[in-house]
Figure 1 (tube, rainbow, N blue to C red):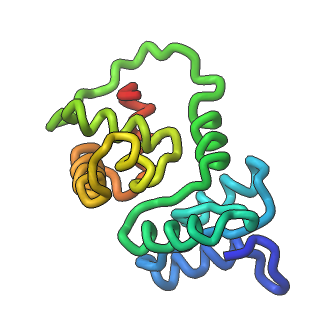
Figure 2 (cartoon, rainbow, N blue to C red; figure 1 turned 45 degrees about the vertical axis):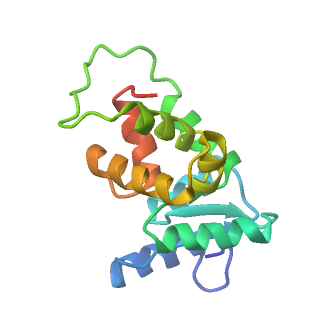
Length: 163
């Protein structure tokens, strides 16, 4: 979904698409990398956000990831999302509730890499495991955190101070 389109902008089109077909998975593909556009696109229901200068391999990776129920943010965009989540939060007096089923050390390691914007392929290479093993761990992480995608996992991990 491009953000600048005639008649209906990409944010409104994404919202409309999500209302009409909630199972649709939208990836924003745009030239805009400012916070306002990023967060408007994600709030509208996009599960991916890429800039148009992205390598074609990354675009294919994003399409595959979102097709498999994952979120995909370009690393520079992921950094802005994380910065926004941590901006002005300071030390909190609230104690986060523990998880019903705690994450294993390997799952915490993978979650930490996800929070940096690493793809499954990049996590696999860094940890010397197969991409399929990473996908299995990601599925377990999402289940244990009670979230549906990688972006929500990053948010929840920050809330629970897991990373």
